[in-house]
Image (tube, rainbow, N blue to C red; front, side, top):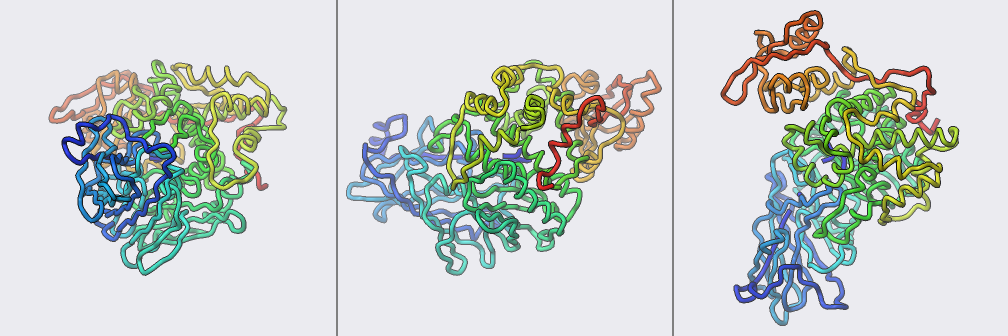
Amino acid sequence: MRPCKLGVLFCLVSCSSIFWAKQPKTAAKPAPGNPAPRITIAVDATEAPRKIFHSWLQIEAAPGPLTLFYPKWIPGEHGPDGPVGDVAGLKIFSGGKEISWRRDPVEMFAIHCQVPAGASSVEVHMDYLSPASSLGFSAGASATAKLAVISWNQVLMYPAGFKAAEITYSPSLMLPEGWKYATALTTASENGNKISFAPVSLETLVDSPVLSGEYLRKIPLSEGEAPVSLDVAADTAGSLEITPEHLAHLKGLVTETNLLFGAHHYDHYDFLFTLSDNTAHFGLEHHQSSDNRTSERSLVRNEERILSAGLLPHEYVHSWNGKYRRPAGLAVSNYDQPMVGDLLWVYEGLTTYLGSVLTARSGLLTPELSREGLAEDAAIMDRARPGRTWRDLQDTATGAQTLFGSRRNGAWVSWRRSTDFYGESELIWLEADVIIRQQTHGQKSLDDFCRLFHGAPSTPPEVKPYTFDDIVAAMDQVAPYDWRTFFTERLQSHGPGAPLGGIQASGWKLVYDSSRPAILRTAEEARDHADFMFSLGFTVNNTDHTMPDVIHGSPAYQAGIGPGMVLVAVNGRAYKRDILRDALRQAQDSSQPIELLVRNGDYYSTYKVDYHGGERYPHLERDPSKPDVLSDILAPHTK
């Protein structure tokens, strides 16, 4: 998942108070030797524009107690965030008669019921209420008047006691008239607006969302064996346009990624690309596709194209690193089993590093913009994460399921820390790449690790779990070194400061000056905010002048300013971002503090910020005393 990459759930049943009193508090298990059930699921998405999906399931079941689960732990979302609270209208039938059910009092995602004597199946009717809010991952806003993303885990249930790979589903889907669709599933038949898909396991079904919409375009990125396609849906037809240059870069992404890994682990691959200002924005990985959502004009506006450039590379890398090779703690057999995220610094951190590298190698970003992006990631860890003094990187991975939820409010992220196993681990994997190159005198790199660990032979989708020991062993095989100590020290280290060894050893230095980087200027305009993070310690929304967060220990924090306050005036003059920038420059030659009038709820106060360092923005500056390894890393392999 990419946290722009950014998902969530439900269920329970019994029949009578007498039956319920006898129910165990754990999920009922099938009798030994019972075959896994076959399930038919029909989803009616014709009312997607008003954000309601109707689902009907026929589930094979023997007479007696039955426990059904609504998927809880969603692969790629790293937490128990299945949107169970958005399920409504749940009814269960058998033999044409409705049977009663009860939710488990402890496990909110399980329901219990009693299958009548003589019955061989139950029918489950349920609605999924897709939210309008754009917060969250796949359980955030997923439908507009013109498009919808159907995530199967949101519209189904499954019997307890079986592995997801064992249960077979025969899925079908009804779409609004005239809508097209794209998915990694195989279409068995089409009849008007009803599509029937070939039977698949529950594991494959949940791994295969459907993108649909009135305006949808399929663009081949590669052909032949294991073809790759860009499938784009948007709220307007004009947003589907793509320049020849951008298309060439996307085709280059496919080429460069396959060169990096030396093999693939899909039969075909679909980038499902949703362009809308009214859906949640994130990326979520799957074996043979990815669910990518960003702003409506991301293909036609250069600014948006730059800001979303790393989304598709990140999710594509996940087909190898995250789906095929997966930490053992995340390779669970069904969706009610808790996931252990202690190796997310590999799952997400290595993917963040490789995604950034491939964004540059494919030309989706220039080398200059790629360095600016790396500088900002490093600076955030270096200057905007004082929480590193108490919370190490390993704990952000282990506690990922709590951090994904807490980061949505945005306040005190600097002190609490966020899902930093993305950004901080990127720095660590850069350093590992440089060390391999140094140890082998330029003969090998992290690319060799990727080919060894994720590469040949090519396979259909499968999961090959790994442990920390497997990572160390593979790194040793590429370049003998004390990798166990290397990773352990960085996972358990504390601040202040960030692990900048990789940047420094690659021939560059992280510096701060008053020149705003191009990628930051682009983000300010496109996201409508002003960035004073590395000077005063906050950003300001341009619309309502709210400061969403204040960096713990920063000049603004020391003055008494906190998250959620509203910046009203600067030195007695109504706030505008240029006025505050002028004040920063003037304060460099003055001993007087900058006075900020701030509204906190219904109260106004003036805070004196004693800061005289001027505007400060991060950059990478070339260190001529060392070889330029970073440029070699970012250079395309096709040349």
